[in-house]
Length: 232
Length: 232
DNA sequence: AAGTACGAAATCGTATACGAAATACTATGG
DNA sequence: CCATAGTATTTCGTATACGATTTCGTACTT
Image (cartoon, rainbow over the protein chains, first blue to last red):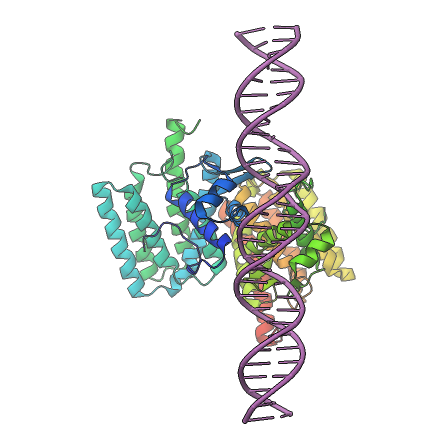
């Protein structure tokens, strides 16, 4: 676990070169090697990966469909991100789909899963001490991944992954890590686990999970309206 | 209005040939010219459209990302659909995103919009008399389109459109049009409008909109469990 | 000095061509 | 008559090449 790029659909067979290119570029974006605004030149990437431009082009357009890059006709592709509005859209959408995913998964989560999730959450608490945001973020995904492991609707799960990837591309930007928020987050995780343990009804769980994500957005918004330092 | 293919982002500039191919194939799928299971041969499509295979390939993969076609390495692409499980996933997801979209849009819907939506709904009622399922379905999209016109989150709107397109590809299959359901649907539309008019709170509206879609799924499920005639 | 026009470079978009994989077919042996 | 192996055909996957479009830099004009 604690992998960064998520939703590569596990099978790391890397069958076609276009898939190889897709995975490679996606990883560079998600890991932060290509930061938002970075200019993706097809020929250059093709050379780097040792393939021709056609599969690279295909990979880029696939990433465009996921919202990770922006493609402009006859101009080129750039790593998308940065835009606060886009951040809001993504977080709001994530709030909804994560809420649904949690509620749908809840009845299928067993005691063993709860224990695993709780262990991850405790580890997150430790990260707060040593201030390790990168690891914290990774563990946060792990935590929710445990909950979503049994999600009966793969479509919804896919939407969650897409949101995560989009956020990941923003890693070290002005977003993320509003000071006090991370601490609350850990507490909310624990509360969520208790709700699931006690077989709370779906609506309650959904609402809690949704609020969990929405609170992070609210914290960000509160911060920016107070000190409007955000990107240009 | 009452167009079938939705979400082609309006701009019918048809800039690149790949976009032209994308729009053309998508339209054929959504309109039902290419039915589920139909084998999409790149070279053939390329010839039909008067372009080479490269842009066609790109178009197909884009459609794959939207779930409209299934692509198998070194084998080819087929129009996806049919699978009852997939139908369930799609409807469940739609239920969630439509619910959210409606709730988010509600505060921005004015009296004029309500009136338009109501007019569409009355037209739908007429379709029930003459039994015109095709027009009914189109109007149904129009109805919800009016509601979503002011949706403040384009991501969510996009998810709704994707769901619609996926359903459209199933047009004349075993799904759709469970007898009594269409009638209830019209009534639910009216109820929804009244909720919006009376400025009901977001949760109430979201729940109603979600149930509206979920009820259609339930009707389908009830039908198939009673008479399991669905595709092998 | 600022703005505009023109030319050069960079980059994308697509056609064509060829190699690779999978499928369909046929002939042969049981 | 059925199973199987081997070949032929289809179709995809990607490299290469070239035309189209945009962008950048430079020179010229006002």
